[in-house]
Image 1 (cartoon, rainbow, N blue to C red):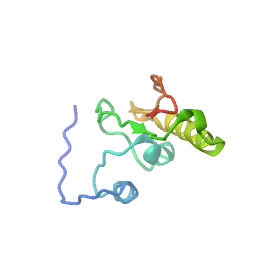
Image 2: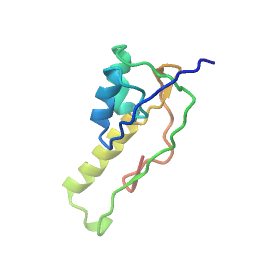
Image 3: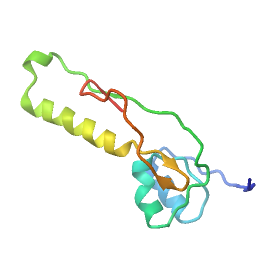
Length: 110
């Protein structure tokens, strides 16, 4: 186990800003895999807490009636499900790994 002392007082609700701050060496950040995977693969960032589980986030799509759903809405829901499945890769051991998705559907994504 390695102890790392950190200091500073930056707080933000913008993932892109936090990502850039971490890349620039201003500290560590807890960010979703889809934001950091390119920087990790490019070795601009390293995973420092591989066993940290920040929980998950569920995205829900709400619509009036499935029977009369326009094709564009159905395609958008399918796109969301695909994007969230691709983005739902947790960071482990300094690299990205796949996690099986449970029951992703057009109603509940993520």
